[in-house]
Image 1 (cartoon, rainbow, N blue to C red):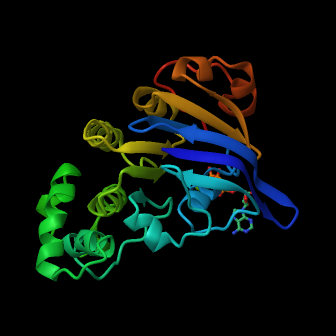
Image 2 (cartoon, helix red, strand yellow; image 1 turned 180 degrees about the horizontal axis):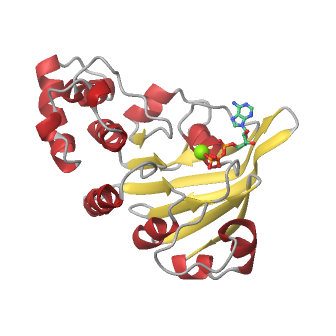
Length: 246
Ligand SMILES: Nc1ncnc2c1ncn2[C@@H]1O[C@H](COP(=O)(O)OP(=O)(O)OP(=O)(O)O)[C@@H](O)[C@H]1O
Ligand SMILES: [Mg+2]
């Protein structure tokens, strides 16, 4: 579904992503981990067109998408969430999600239609009851869910998640794991950046580890957490199931 070849992003003298080769299969759930500053968010920004690669190519379903602006990426079926949540603070929860639905559809639609399309994502993320509140009134946990609901409303086939679990309580994390399983079971391909290693291990079919912009390992969750390079660069010590890195 997604194929990345020789992808490099340089900021001055810094190689934030360095000669990365990676593929993502249709319907796969790929986890992406790595230390702070490893280039994870930069990679997502490159895939979604927020940044232009210094070198390399990105193809989505066989078509090169380098340099495609974010709104077109969105309409092609690539959805994302942001590490730092960006709700429209004054708008209601419902209208935030309706905006996502309308943004993704090039044909003209009414606001009422956008609101109708927002219902399922809001129910799925557990925000339906809170739909009439302004987004600014939500807890950080619910703002993260809103971010996810808005991305879902764009109807993505490939969903890229940047630390959606950060700042959530344990209970909220468990709820969101169930939500993500539903989304994946619905046929959405997911790439998830996350520092909570136990969450990545529970959800991912395959895990890629980045360090200093380079891929150091790519394999099954079990292979990855027992890999000496991963333990040295990221996990710090052999982790026990249920513990978190960083
Ligand atoms: N717009 C930018 N201009 C200059 N340097 C940048 C820019 N964006 C990112 N960087 C640098 O690129 C490197 C990779 O950053 P990135 O945000 O991709 O890391 P990350 O893996 O997402 O880290 P974290 O886990 O902390 O979110 C870092 O050294 C960062 O300071
Ligand atoms: Mg990041």
